[in-house]
Image (cartoon, rainbow, N blue to C red; front, side, top):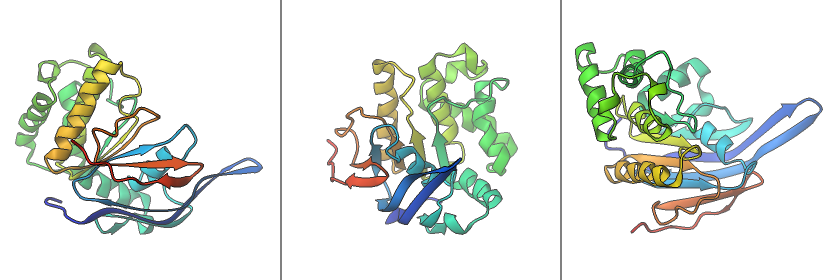
Length: 235
């Protein structure tokens, strides 16, 4: 999946209901959304607004109760979970708030894991590619350490390298700076800007932090609906 153009994410009437005992919680109320190739989009909103639910559905991590979601033309809503996992491994990188690096693997082994899982790139090329990705995010010197030996910011950089392992054109990130101090968070956000400018499509969830000057567009959710979608030119 390289050189994508046009619409990358398309959501149609997405609705998500969580059944919790006797009460149904509606997280999304018929959301319609289109995101284009090469955009750096920020999903904004307070806790409980539905932004993380929307991101998880766009990434195929969760499924909608009703509605349709297409990612690079693939109808995720129509795929079974095992097929979605394979598709996601090859086409989409995911960055989590809590890094999700496997603690018993070295940093470089964590970065190679998606390549091993999807059998992308010849096995002999994977260590070199992983090291190159770690160099790009500034943590190559920690390649052979376990994640616990790294700071939070270094672990998040390693997680960003891992998200690029299979050279996806799409990266989604759920609160990627939520556990970082402001200085480290700024450095991580700069990495996402660089990736976007290199042609990647990036969709990122954040809480209330104003990063509109860094992104191409912000999408604000409130109570499970899109409140506004202003165009946000990036300087």
